[in-house]
Amino acid sequence: MKKTLLLFAIFIIFSITSITCPIINLWDRVFILRLQEELKNIPLWVPLLPDCILYSIMVALPLVVGSFWFFKKREYKSILFLCSIPLVTFLLNCIIKPLIHRPRPPYEMQLGIHPESFSYVSSHSLVTFCLWGIIIYFINKYCKNRVLRYAGIVFAIIWILFVGISRIWLGVHNPTDVIGAYLLGLALLSVYTKLFEKGGLNE
Image 1 (tube, rainbow, N blue to C red):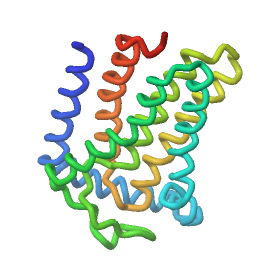
Image 2: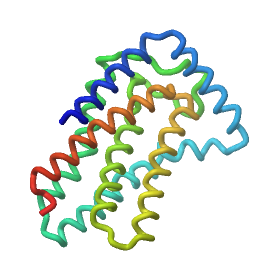
Image 3: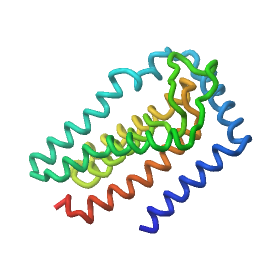
Image 4: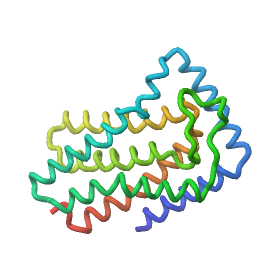
């Protein structure tokens, strides 16, 4: 419980600091421009992947595979638990964005897409972090094959990082929007794993 409260406290402090500090806001802009400059030779379709069908696939894939796994083990509560994660994180993001009311980076910095919603936190990053984070937890808990376990964990981490970087690369999110999403994701994962263990869902 203390660890979870500490993670939420860190998220709140980081959020307040990121939004109110002009120096951090300036750093956000500089970071976006520097990243775009460094990656300018890479086709734009690469960072746009999480905005096309691939993002839906990468949300549906762990839900389908995880649900099938738990269905075979007759852990039906675990299926509901897993499927609730993207819904809960999305709804939470819908509350946080209008509450904090942080605008997106300037229009001229955005590449390819121009979202209308607010910026903090990155919903793509939050949903991806929580869903694939819990997949890492399940892989580490259930997968006995060391090679498959490491391969699954590495793949999940790469996907989480790629989604976050792509949001900054496209200029639709500040770096602190993504970092904030990861910090909130850590706090939520702490809640999820505790509920999973204490709720007897793993039995």
